[in-house]
Image (spheres, rainbow, N blue to C red):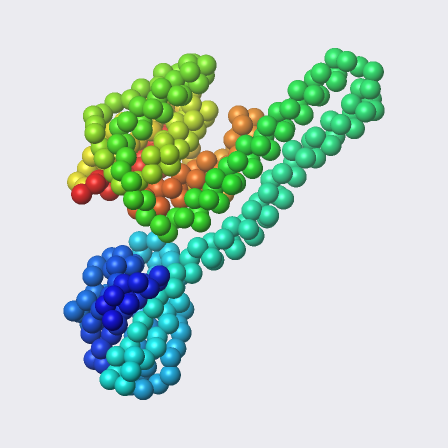
Length: 331
C-alpha cells in the first residue's frame, strides 16, 4: 500500500477510521508543508468540508469530492477526492491541484481584455498616420519621414506591451509553484548595475550599488534579475532628476533585502496602494512618453509573491521613492 500511495501522481493520504494519517506520499507532504503521517488529519489540513467528507466516508457513506481554496502562503485551489478503502473504515484522500488550470483560463480572459484595451490607442494612431501619408502628406517627403518615425515608435510600444503581457501571464501561471533554485541576490544586483549603467548615464544620473554579499535566497535567477531591473529602470525613468539611483543590499533576521531608491519627484501617498495594479499609472502621458507599459510593477509583485517575499514601497513627494524587496534567505 505504501508503494502504491507513493506512485500516485497527485498528493495522496491514507486515513484511519479515527482520522489519523496512516500513509502519505511525498507530494502530500510538500502540499501540506509537513509530513502528516502519524498525526490527525486536522493537524495538517484545516478545511472543515474535507474533514467532514473524510469522516462521512469512513462511516460508510459513498465516495465524495470537495473543492476548496487555501490563501496562505499563496492562493491555491484543490479538489479533494475521498474514497473508502475496504471495510475497515480506512479512507483514501487524493488532492488534485486545480490552480494551474484556473490560472490558464483566467490568463486567456485577461490577455484578451487587456490586449484589446491597451492596443487600441497605438493601433488608432497607426491608422491615422497611414491615412495622412496616403492623403495630405502623399507628396511631402519630410512629413512622411516624420510620420514613419512616429509609426515606428507606436509599433515598438505595441511590441513592448505584448512582451510584458506574455511575461506577466507566464509568471501568474506559475505563481503558486515555489522556485527550487538558489540565487545570490548580490550577484544579480551587480549584473543589473552593469547592464543599466549606460541607461543611467544617458539620463544624467549615477547608478550605485552598496551593501555586501553573498545573499543567497531560494529562487529563479532570471526572475529576480527581472525584478531588480524593472525597479531600477523605473527609478531611472521617473527619478533621474535626483541625479542618483541607489541599490542597497542588506539582511534583516532571516531575510535578504534589496532597496532601489531614487531622489526624484516622489509619489503621492494616494497612488502607492495601486502601483502594482495592471496598467495603473501615476501619470499616463509621462509613462507612455517614456516607453512604459504599466505592467512593470505588476510583474515585480507576482515574481516576489512566487518567491514568498514582500514588496515594500515608501515615497515622499519632492524627496524620492524607495522600493524594497524582502526575500527569505536560504536555510
